[in-house]
Length: 186
Image (cartoon, rainbow, N blue to C red; front, side, top):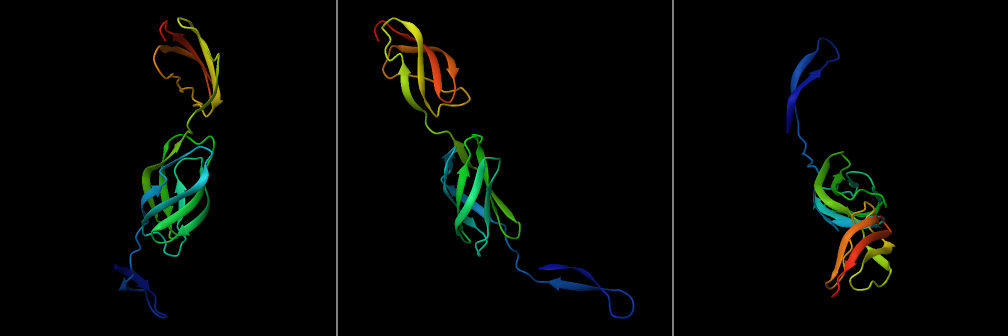
């Protein structure tokens, strides 16, 4: 219930101030409660589903993400409790948690803070050169592949014991060069 004053101008005479009352149901803002999946990879295109309450029952709520690099392409299910959207994550999207934002047709929004994260795919090493190093030798090895961390923080390790990684040279999205020592008893 909203109350207040209203200026009413009759067809003749001066302005009158009268009381008015306006009854309306208060429309709640959307309240997203969960998103599935909660993360996906750079360069991903696929569906996400947001559930919650007070989405537009007529199916007009929209979805967005904080930051840049995540785009909503189209919608599937849209009702009062569920919103399914097809999204694309760009290859350069920041690797951060994003707010998920549902907006109703009356411009009210609801936010699910830091609930969707853009991630890197698992690294995919393809080759190691040289493929063998003798016991007791220190030298460089080069690993090539895909999906290494473009920020140069990927690391190298070996199964078993006796091989120590001493330092790194080049580290980019496709190449990792490391200086290693193979112990005399490896």
